[in-house]
Image 1 (cartoon, rainbow, N blue to C red):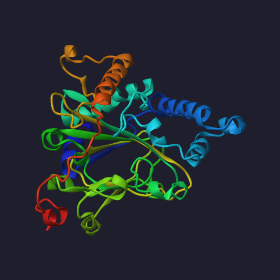
Image 2: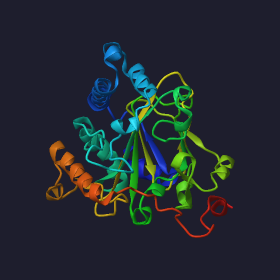
Image 3: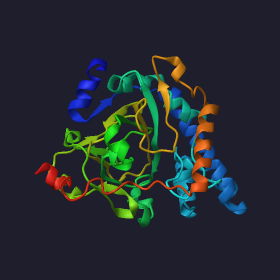
Image 4: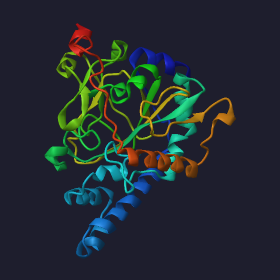
Length: 328
């Protein structure tokens, strides 16, 4: 499959790769760090009366209990980037050694290099997603892509304009639980990346979505089901979404992104840095401590500017690049 990764990726707009990662070595450490954060949140937010009881809950029950407390922006404590808005000295994000190890994971970079080549940068447009069964999600959060459904979009639609057009971006989607239609796997339209960038709008609950997305229902889509250890690589122009989690269990995933070194990240001033190069002297960020320092530096830059990332919408003037007009 290695020699065909780029060929399949360029034809379909995505490629599913089986058994790339090892659960014990690569994925379980991330879940363990999530569990550690969960316990910190229990100590911080749960009443003294209930604390001991909640600490004895399993991962899923503990998370559901925290959700029931109505903690503002709970998902941000588990997200692997700074918040989109209102960054301040107390802004928290999930930046553990295990995440750094995943970003630098040789098995992932070997696959990504088949598409991007040997010069690769880590892109700061990255997310982790803990999706409860939809029946447990507050109605106001059902369309929040980090905890509920993700609307039809292109990954380029959430980048700056220079990133939308001038950056070769690959999304690496990593499931930490088996993903099927029932628990909210992704849907994609094969070969839709060949349409190029289409207009996006700010839709339900502030989520970026494709303008004229109703037209996608008329296109054949494929369910991107995956097992733990698999990864899915996506083109930045691929039309895709995620389904609601109708199962009784959680669906946990992470999306890392990489681009060709030297190209705009599409999320300045958040940190982008070289993770692989033929010239080892170009790799300036070599350990967890240096990586954390980059994010802290970015946070300190954002605070006095009251920085917030606003998606540069609409992508094009007029309706020429609205999806119905592009595919008609």
